Length: 78
Image (cartoon, rainbow, N blue to C red):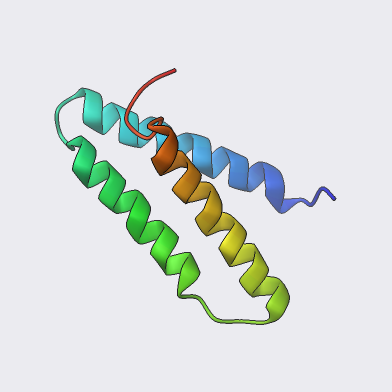
């Protein structure tokens, strides 16, 4: 099911990914720091509280972030 927030979330993800890649490419943020930022973001979602529906959403977000970390795309351009 599509919601109005999906495009905003996809845009935010694309912008953040581009910023992290640019910081890495310019030597301003090493790979381990980028992965640390992503791990912190995932942990924030895993530590969130709310209704069952909200918690399922937070778990999905954390799963997506962890998939990005595992794919190595967090520091490499395709």
